[in-house]
Length: 440
Image (cartoon, rainbow, N blue to C red; front, side, top):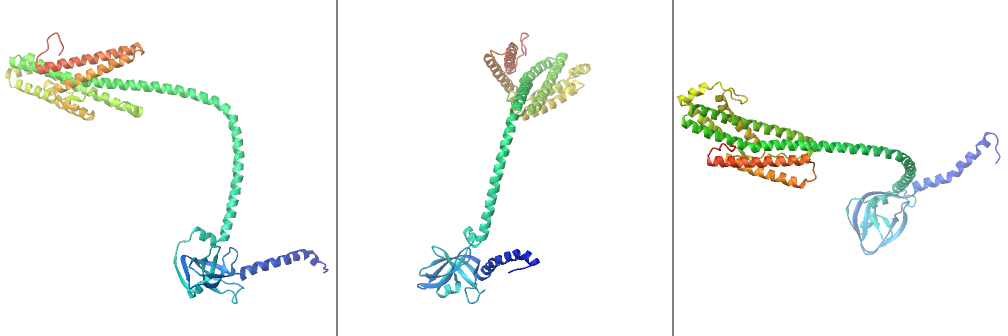
């Protein structure tokens, strides 16, 4: 055919449209003329035929079903119910019928459910669809997912390749920078070592300070029964002076005993101060700081001593001569903080010392006991501490001489304190006065 003008220009486009026409017609025919299956219910069923039954069905394929003849002579599994829309192969295209999927050994076959019921017994129950059911009923989606997965794998492989290249580039940069960092790390390590050394020294100093605070508190705790024992023995002397009618010596002894209770209270305040400071500084060291301990499990109860003091004071006040001498001595200063007279000190010192030592015993896991028990406990604690210091002295032969001298001095102090506590215990148990050649 010969064409002129504009038709000659458009003839190749027309030819391409004509070439695509059969393809479009085939696609339309396949989409409208083929059977279409739509799954409805996933079941677990069994078809029991009446003998051998021959039926027509559609063989299940992912593209489109094909018509086949099947013969069923024994029960067969049924896995699904669905709706089949028949195409151009039947006399009424578009006819819809409920079909059941029979699972043969080589394939699944869709057969009209009414034919199954006419030629046998069809029993089933619904079940949840499995992954296999879903993939079988959605082949296009499965293909699309596989294609999508392949694309993802391709992208991942490409990204890994790019990452590997970038890693190699970074590795080169790292190797180039490693030489410069080595010097910096060496300097930082040296600085860290200096800081660690300073930290270690500071920690050692802090631990030494804790040991000093604990030692002072323990020394004070060990001296409490000795101080109270001195007050008791002074009260014994005051009692003897009272019975002998020696007025001035009696009041002097009573002042000394009251002053010893004041020293007892001051020692309790020192122990509490050292304990508070110890806990504050130990908190800065963390959990490695040793626990605070007084070194004794028994503290002397001053209540009985204070009762004796008040009893002697009031008994003397009942005697006009003693009361007269007391009035003459009222101007004598009594050096106990918070009190301006002997009477105030005698009446008020007891509550102070009892409250203070009760609080200390409760917070230090100690118990209050008699003076004799606390003296015995103090003597035992002093002996143990002295033995521990001497053992440490033997192990520390290579330590600085100043440290060795301090260990020897501490051991002697604890040993002397133990001997003093034992002598005091003996004096109190025997209720005798010490001679002029020995300390109380």
